[in-house]
Length: 308
Ligand SMILES: [Mn+2]
Image (cartoon, rainbow, N blue to C red; front, side, top):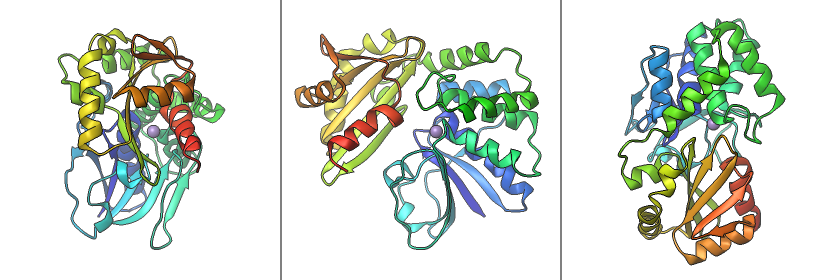
């Protein structure tokens, strides 16, 4: 049995691509099961409720030597903690590549807007049957990762695939569906500060001794985060120390206005970010217009800066 796993702090794309890929493999006669490396966020929960789908089980530990398929990530720091005791047999992803394997494996990486786009392509190129529910899940993953085609990560292929998927899914008003998803994601209730920061949080190893944590909150209600500025900054400081990071950031991304407000652990982190992104410091909040994608805009600038 192969374990299909998405990244930690799972989002809609990672969960939906893993779950639908399970179906694809089952149709191929391969025994595989999708698992989540964490609790589902409110957007993903909304999607699963809407389509009446059972969410993948949350797994904490995978038995040593098990075969695993990585979906929507390829970096150890974003995967299951005991990844080094496991046998990676396949990777499907749309992120930058940082990996070393000890044997040849199957890899499908494409610079598309979502991993769900890659899974959709696999169906359309094969004789596998894509059910309306699975088409809906893939569509949700594309909408989520591309911020309904607003993010600069969006490609023409994502739009074409979404159209083709909706011929099967038949969601009447796709834009309305996207707003429902984003509002569900923005509705965070009385979430605690660390959970908020880590809802969509990744650790990057930009260079030797240059580990950074970057959390983002994609939202239609930026004030939810900005109103908690002081406690978020205090928690960023704590995380920076506890996890021995060179810097920690939390970017509040206003999905509808396509700009961002970033909070930092300390003055040093603030200076670096301001310099790299020409940010406008608004009372400790670093505002940058048109900056919405950690993958395509934020992480690459850091990576470049640290010279790799
Ligand atoms: Mn993704």
